[in-house]
Length: 171
Ligand code: S3P
Image 1: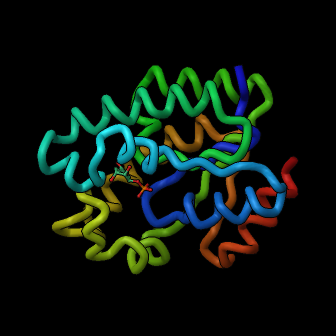
Image 2: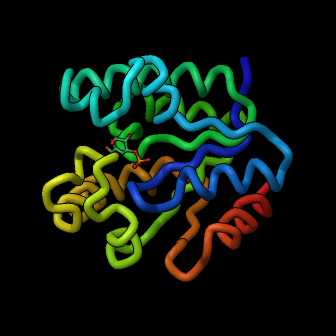
């Protein structure tokens, strides 16, 4: 049973994937992204899963992909922004932290995240009114991100390399 060394959580546009790759490179360990795992399992893109099968089907695939990744992966793991909504996933993340994983919340303001997620067709939950939808997501999820995190990095004034260095230094 492996334990990830670093798990990145946070809303869309916080840089979980771009930062995750960089942290893995800095520490010479593997990087894995549960959005990629979900798309592989589904055999189609995440927008297609949402469109064809609905959000509930996506969340079920995501829950299983996250549980597998948390059990198998011992590098850096970037989670989809909504993965932390599931109570069983929350419990697994708490367990990973007890077992030594750094669970890092990439905090970001609407002003910084909006240009990154605006009109991005790859994010079905933010397809119609990205700013308003992002803010609603973040308001609902912030308490969960904060509760699960062993560390928080406010990314607003940092570039991805600086965020990656801050995370690598946590170890
Ligand atoms: C989602 C975030 C996306 C992806 C899906 C749902 C969410 O991942 O998992 O579109 O609920 O916040 P990113 O956080 O990498 O954008």
